[in-house]
Length: 158
Image 1 (cartoon, one colour):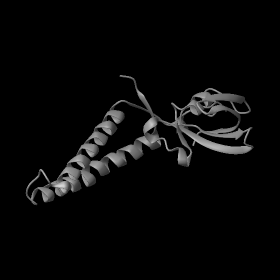
Image 2 (spheres, one colour):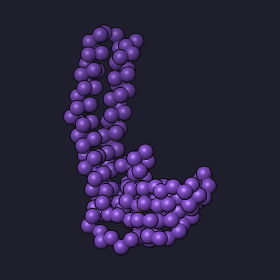
Image 3 (cartoon, rainbow, N blue to C red):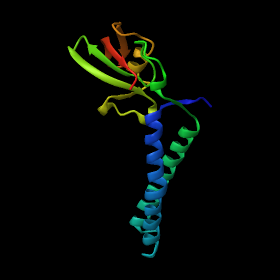
Image 4 (spheres, one colour):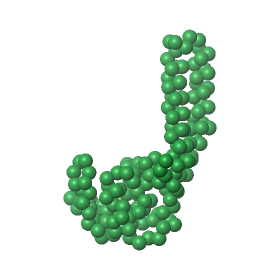
């Protein structure tokens, strides 16, 4: 099985989420199932079926997170010398030439990506197009929605 890249920050965040699922949400759902069972006939007990479904979702999420952590290659970008080159974990400031807009992205692993706060997965076309490039490079990235034209303004390892 291949290693899953994960930032140090992402590893901490996933461990916190995993702990919450195991020690807060899992016991709560077990209590909800026990309470629903106490109401009698399980065939027509909507509370019981909803709680069992939620339990399945929580267990799947726990399993996914445990597998990801077991197969993670944790990379602390602060340990990598800054050379102006875009690498996994770097925070990149780019200029969108077509939109006349400055954008900042942090390139992270799949489980920690959150585009709304500027964390993009290493597997996205934008991240793939940026990795390996240098400050002041002008690049065109092919995406499903069309070509994007960027200039790399800054690369920080924070």
